[in-house]
Image 1 (tube, rainbow, N blue to C red):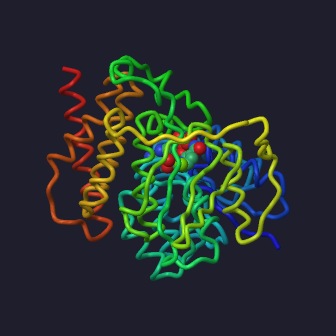
Image 2: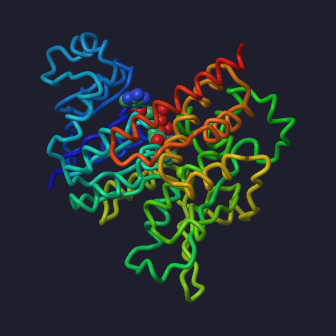
Length: 386
Ligand code: NAD
Ligand code: MG
């Protein structure tokens, strides 16, 4: 039976990996909506190729360009943030949430409120509005399938088990390109060095997050929402080969791990076919060639993002949304060559130190918290540059 699917962030790293899998068995899926932010040509090309029903470009000003690029195809062109939310409410069997950043929050929440099955790559939405999103899942009966490789691994290791039997969850981390760098060495790194991840090929923002290890901090908060074992029972372990994607320890001292090549098409395929499995073009694991698996404790001094995220998770309320928004601004400033690498965490820390407000209780409150943190972080970027 053909399943109707939509892909938010279709031109990105996760989006194109999803379309790659979809294309391999095009009879199985009917593509409903595809979205992108600014890449009109890439979006139109994907929409034509996959015979989508609607294509949505996030930037309103690009509507005419998209309409022209789709002329004569019968594919509907839409534009703007409200069009993204409307697309998320279309009747589908499966939605991939792969927009990067808090920009993905409203469409992802809209899909969850409709009770859809949502494959979630967009971790920032869960970091900023986890309570709201999990509340929407409970209220609507939506299904949230984690795509982030660690959370997908945990989801697989938990299959059929009771949460009360889980003692500990271990999120593995590659340590990123600067795992062995001193703070002095990190001070001088360039965006080009920082986006070069040793194991994974990903979008620019998450690559920088991996280099600062803020990615693992965001994933800690993500795991805290998805798997209610208590924040103190979620730990982080550096594992440079990225072969074990995460582990679950049960109270009988059994530990289950999920292993695989570092290829996002594996967790995406898991979420796409769930509860079944489909074949992928990925490399099967060859442990003889890999030879050894290494582990080390993370270093919170060289990677302060880990501490900042755990503290923000513990503080709750608007702290995680503040952490995320400040980080998005600081990462963009680093990628734009406006601040140095070590400033990213310093800005996040300073914005968090200046934050105190009652916990946001709805989407408007979260977006307001996000906007205030962005403004605070932006003025710090300007101050540093001045
Ligand atoms: P990317 O930068 O490659 O792609 C992002 C997509 O989002 C693009 O299609 C872009 O057009 C769209 N987009 C960007 N800003 C937008 C906005 N303001 N409004 C609407 N759309 C917008 O990013 P990615 O690496 O594919 O990551 C996507 C999400 O998945 C992120 O949340 C990331 O943390 C998560 N994730 C990615 C990977 C990976 O391997 N790339 C792994 C785990 C989790
Ligand atoms: Mg991950």
